[in-house]
Image (cartoon, rainbow, N blue to C red; front, side, top):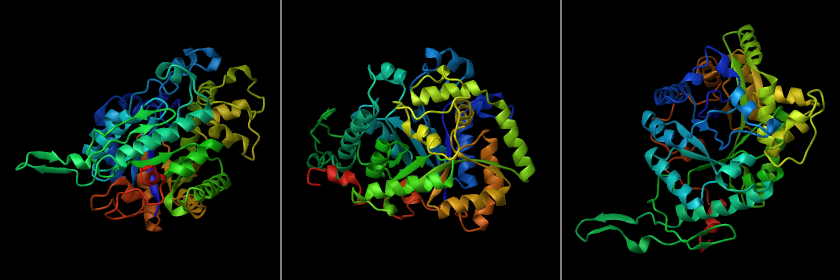
Length: 452
């Protein structure tokens, strides 16, 4: 069975940057309204989605022309709110929908992050996923961390941050630590709560964890890095990968590479779920879908894409002629996103890549439900366990998926007929388990334990 995971962020236009210009794009006005979000979450849950995924960032982009003015004028991922406070409300409004949020290991100290995520996992009955990022923008680091950290070192910090979190989540409290024995006046057994005494290169964290074990202990672990270092990190830590590809062949190569790397850590293909991004323009007829696609593309200002390219790649693309070929530069930003263009069969110019990146380098599927379902099944045969669905217009595009695509996938037996009737954690749901919310025994988290 496939999983459908809805992609968004707490800004006005999550998938297509200039979508705020469209009168039928409700998120432009609704992104600050909790009722908008709870309504969207309920629609997604009823409509066949497994989870709602929130991207996030921590800077107003200033790479393009060395100024924030183009970013502010185009509203490139700005304004943007924080998704973490929203998750509790969404958990209360839904029964089975998974909730995945982005948090950066470069900016959150692991002790603070572990407490926040444990709390959300408790309040959502174990439906939390963590999208692990290391961040990339120079201004992000100046705002939060003080100084910029190079790409590969960010992953070294992330590896150690994860080790601290694993120890706090998995080892600091025994399963039966909380006894609530009124007769003896014992709330929790002191012998069942322990320090972790982590003393590493980047972090010194004695512990113990502040939170009793949540339903999943460790939230479901997502990761989206596609650089060489990012793939290595995913192979070691990720239970689910979210990746961008312009072709099915590119996805197959990426997935095979991550699986090969995972074997070095004692992990197998069954330990990792692969969720490539797709942008479906689905409608009752192909002609309707094509008309919608053309309309959305008309909203895009190429400069918006240049601002986003510059922000994500941490490189000023205003200095190039838009007809110049997109070069494989040693950027310090999101290297994997640049790799998607460089390794594609098409030779992209700067201007072409900008307009494409304004709506992300995800495969675009335009057609009726039958056409789009057939293509998704081809991706499934190539190794996709499901898809992160980008919606050009929200909620309209998600509603179209629920109305025209989901019934077709269900009729083919590719998607579950309904949300699970029983209460499942996100890990149980995505791995199709029952009564087992724990990390797989092959996961490196177990090696972080003192006796691991």
